[in-house]
Image (tube, rainbow, N blue to C red; front, side, top):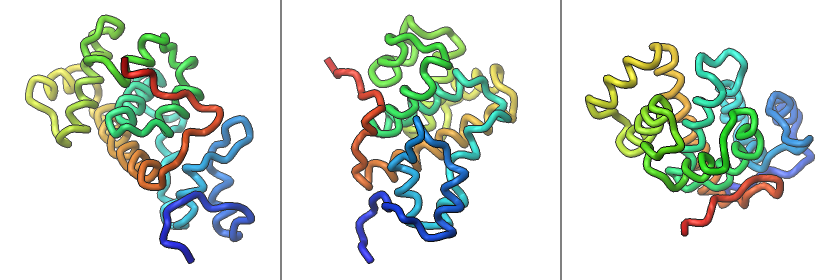
Length: 183
């Protein structure tokens, strides 16, 4: 047994294989992140896919703004790149907006007022786990309680995902986008 957090390679034990069946594939490929979760069947059972379902109270675009900004905050190119590749087109992001999730002020001209507020919420949660009063008021005014809980859960979940991917030193998936140049 190794003490290095890394993707588990097939063949998987029966319980692990059964749990991994519920995880999404990208172009038929089981992501390294999910194979890293497979180091713990408990972690697999508690896993991330539950927040990426059709029942989310958030529109896809808002969900992805939160995920991209959170993973960018934690410098997790692995997960950021997977989400850009899989969801950016469906979410209607422009190339400028994709880059802005990593580089720009939350009030950049490429974002609507609502999206700027959501980015400010995400930035505050990632930085301190709380919201300053003006951001909190805008959040309360713009999102239902169910949506607020979803945003908070996404920030927390993708903080965890970013930590797992970063600590495991996962290289970006071959099919995934890469962070834009910092220049």
